[in-house]
Image 1 (cartoon, helix red, strand yellow):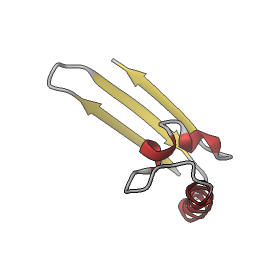
Image 2 (cartoon, helix red, strand yellow):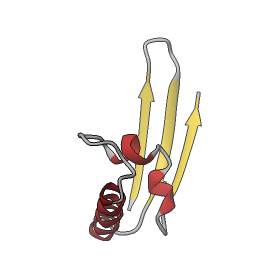
Image 3 (spheres, one colour):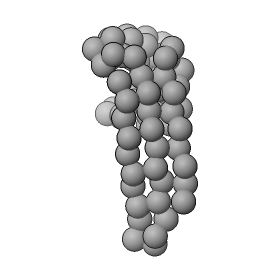
Length: 73
């Protein structure tokens, strides 16, 4: 799977990035199991968080076949 995104702020700063991952269902299963393992191990505070807020912005890059590239402008 290949994803592309771009965000920009009112101040004109922008970031653009791509993410290449394995097939979406496989990636969802792998990240869900690892996220649950970390929560059960007490590695994250209780409450709602996205995976990147809970485990760090680079969390997705810890999985085989995931390549994240970001360019700030």
